[in-house]
Image: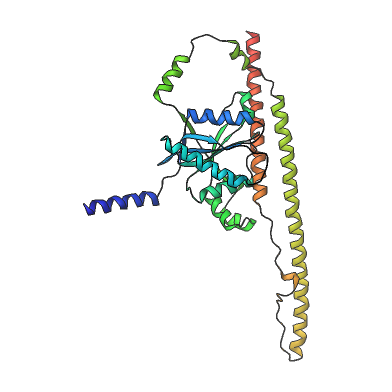
Length: 337
């Protein structure tokens, strides 16, 4: 019996040591509706909430969620939020509902979620929860008939770099790290119970084409494209400012290297004269000299995040434009027939 217990404990420890990678986020339909309702009620204000569920192998199950309250003042928000979260989880535990934290959800506007604040929140969650996700919902895409849900996690390589706090060009080249390696998107699978699926089947109608089906051919997406273009222009301005920081850094670095070479040449000439006079040569490095003080290189994290945002906005514009062209060709074919 002792041998069996020991082998069982060894198997558990082995499974914990080598956890399978996260492959899919399975979220209950009721949790999806709660997220959508919370985000749309307060739009365009950004809101957040807690995800509850189970971590089973390579699947992260999200079975429930609850919103965080929105406060106007900034005083003691963090402490009040922690107390509210603990109280909600205690109440859920009393009614026998899953109360294991598996991450959080938050709303966004046109997909502008890739910020330093999101990364810091991820790192705070990672201290207690090894595998957690953030579900992003964009209410602005609901008018286009899109369920804009994304499940994100930080990549292991990025977390290693972030803990080291070194985002210099040399370190990034050494790790072969690019701006696309910050986040990992996990596929989302919406699941429902058998009773809910049967009920949804009963609600389906066998009616032919309705007016709502023709409304899908409506191609007026001008506000969405305009907002995307405005956000894209702002991101390009921010990216240009980041590039100016690096240009200023490299100018200062070149100026410092030129000063070091001039000082070194002067010191070598002086040492040659001292050797001719039979004196000891002076050292060719002077740490007390300001020109030998290394210039700190700006972090590339902000520029990587802005590049991610630019790619996101370009992808959204491309997707909407492609759908509009498809609608135009379909409408043209319908008119011809």
